[in-house]
Length: 599
Image 1 (cartoon, rainbow, N blue to C red):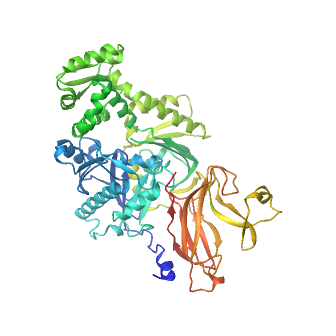
Image 2: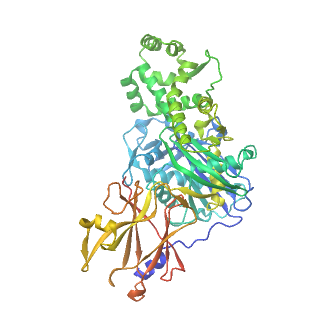
Image 3: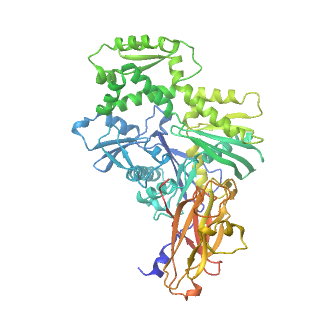
């Protein structure tokens, strides 16, 4: 391929969604996932939630399923709750090719290498994160196509003609986002990595869109209203602050940087597992987890069903019964189960533990003991929401969404936190489905709903300037100058937007670039970020390379005409780069960005 043909083939030339096109949103959560679709057109077009193959009707009405995938010989054997059930039933030693993966999405919240390995349940084998994600999205894609065809919505069969939305936490770094886009491309959802048939949507924003377009809650918002969206998921707590710019059609602007962390309901699970380790012995339980992964998954499934049904309006003598027959038999079958209970009660002579009873290999957990699993995780969530609220003057509402928002104890503690203030606490209708519903609406008009966002960083590019004594910053960094082509120059951080700035979604920052020599065939641009508001030199503390862009030079043109204008958009859910011709008037297209995946 010649440089000129590479230049022509580099850019996305697809058209945006038009009336009648199908939008499919995938809320790919750390613990549970959901899918919905709608048609582009009227903003009142209904959103239809699909039931994925492998869902369990006993939890969330079957409209959400576990983000679990069973892989056999490099292919998806099953997905969702069905995958967990099959894995629990299999004889693992005779089926070493069966690998079950859960909670793998949390890898993107951690500092990671370009493509980290994820260990399967029970250990002993691992796969690349990108491979797991790709296979999951491929399964979802195939399942969605079948369901859309069965209801007569989309008979084409080509997934790349659909418009896809994948949800992501607002607190994710810019480096985590292209991992989702790459996986979507490899799974066949889109025809190219830069395809405009895929949008990444921020989960709290999606929940806000769903809440403010719900007929029962729409009355709560008016132009100028300020609110917090707290997406309380299984893996993360994700908080964004918004102000309503207008209500019809809905327009929002972000009024503070997203905050949160790994404060999801998985911490409740962790507390339960710590209790089990204390009950039977840490070494015994960890051996059970390692050697009996099927029974371990079955125990987690039993716990999950009890956890989501646990209510906090019960009497203090209410019990939660947990069937642990298989688990206890696998762990310590030769020991008397009653002795384990007696040992626990003797070691923990408090009300919470004294109310623990055993009955026919079932654990009967008292209300107080169950509540103890929730207390610390809920307190952390309430504290983080309170901190975010304290930075928002004129706050009127705190809206809770996500699966953890179904927890009555969490709802009550948040309401207690804002009792006596002007802040009203609102729980989104069907909070566990609010994200996928809002993501579908976002996909139908992604550039319209959120008009501006707060910059998480100071963004810019690596630029070069000829040294000048007249410039104060040049004099301050005189020791950093270098000589190129006989000129004393400085490499500096050319700022396109500063941390805390309002970044208009539709606004782009344009700069002129051109090759330095006639022999140069590619112009490389480094995108830099820092948490500092003021920055000048590229070597200052905190400055790091976020990504790079390589744009082929049009070698068919005379050297002096090979200049180009490059625009950056930092206000959207993804960093985007657009290239214009030498006049700066004709847009050539969108250029791929190569992200540096190291934190």
